[in-house]
Length: 90
Image (tube, rainbow, N blue to C red; front, side, top):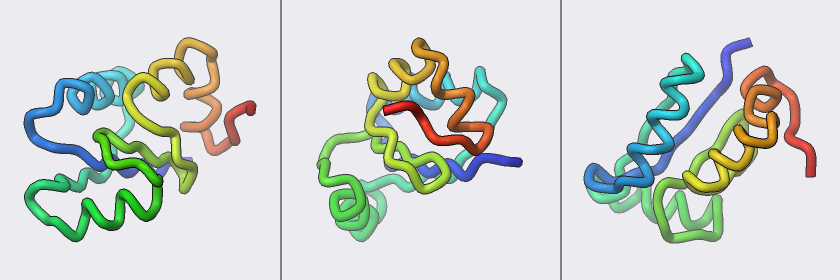
């Protein structure tokens, strides 16, 4: 199963680049919404995540959080499970 990944980003954000680098290492593709190029994306991101910082990452409809949250999931071995279609451990 191919994971459905959505990233809310800005073009200049180092944390966004870090998250995309990790996802690239995992060999997955994503859909990216730049919240500066389209203000509607910012509103949608805040409504969906409750956060106003980037990146905000969603995998298979699950809000992962930001770059540090993504890295933590990877370090805990939960990211691969989520990318495979499972749910992360709480």
